[in-house]
Amino acid sequence: MSLVDQLLVVADETLRTLFAPAQSARVLPLPPDVPLTEPEKRHIAGLMRINHAGEVAAQGLYRGQSLLSRREATREFLRRAAREEGDHLAWCETRLEELGSHPSRLNALWYLGSFAIGAAAAALGDEVSLGFVSETERQVEGHLASHLERLPVGDVRSRQILQQMKSDETGHAQSARSHGGSDLPEPIPWLMRSVARLMTSSAYWI
Image (tube, rainbow, N blue to C red; front, top):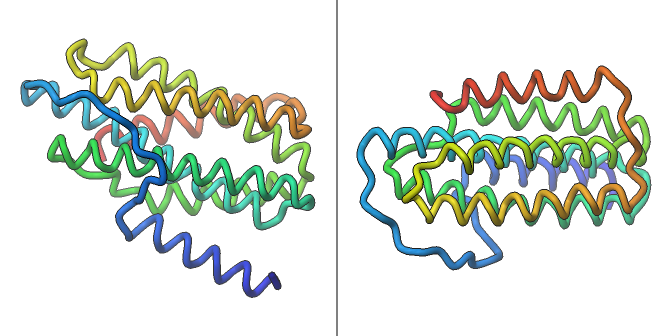
């Protein structure tokens, strides 16, 4: 595709991510919901809103990286990872609806900021870009592990969603390394953690 065609595709994908209902290609079998108190629902919704915002950011990140990737193999890996992240997005969105809650109202900010970061990483070369994916997914794994600990014990439905997401993120990190991702120098991982803290603390409430 020409650059103009690629930009049109990115624009279409952006609008779909931010304004259309998310669609999952994979069916995730889930246990039935259990009775939850209103405080439990609000807390779970806050955690799922964080994860939903993270998946919106992942769509922006991967699309920014894919646009400026230099190797077709890298672009294909990023597209495949973005599709799996799209499943996560749909699962989180559905769970928020079940809890009677809503996604973060700052999703456009998370998406556009992540798109810019992804494009900047890709401009430095595929090795750096893939290293960025590996580090991002490693940090996301940590967030998901923390959320699994913070879920009410009885909420097996949300727990299964997060466990599958965590498994997928582990696979993405490993695949990024196997495709040639390099270690990122400090302070980049520290800066990534700082931005993630800002997003998670905001998305829980907004």
